[in-house]
Length: 222
Image (cartoon, rainbow, N blue to C red; front, side, top):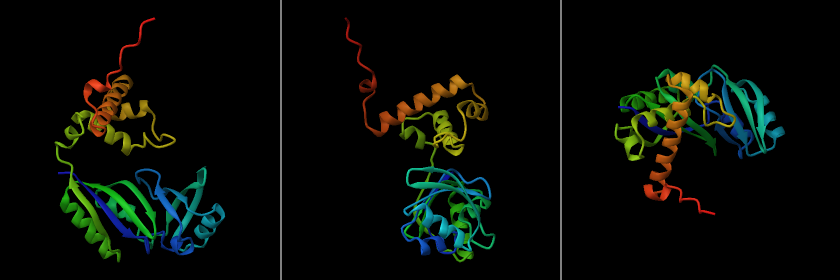
């Protein structure tokens, strides 16, 4: 049974330790699901000059490239030194998927999807073996009933998960609706309708709005 684990990991020794030493106010947020040796990370909490000076001085970072900016935060493609513990790569090697990741106050918080609870234990042991001491903040199973508890059908649930995994909800989007529909093997129109129904189901469920309340009132006549 698929499980989700929220894991806290000290940044020291994981690629960002030296950055936090140089810039204690640093905030970091993963751009998307990790799928390559380079990682898209949004960095903020200091000036760009301070951030780039720390990146240049860090021995834990092999390469970095500024990709984009958004106000007072900057997106960098970062490749960690091979001798540094890369928690993202460890998760991937253990068959997991990093759903989200952020770091502040010298600590990573990763939300990880794994095939079962035993995989969480294996991942925990793997990190400990790499001299990293993780803390399991939350662990729960994605039971078959999970999607229905949110008012979603199984297909709607699977579609939303696929959209998240492929970066459909990122800004800017990392996959088009056509590309996502091709990935799911359905038409563009079918995907659009399924997403609209899923959005409606989530809003109705999470905001505790009765179905009749979500129906728009008739337009007044002239």
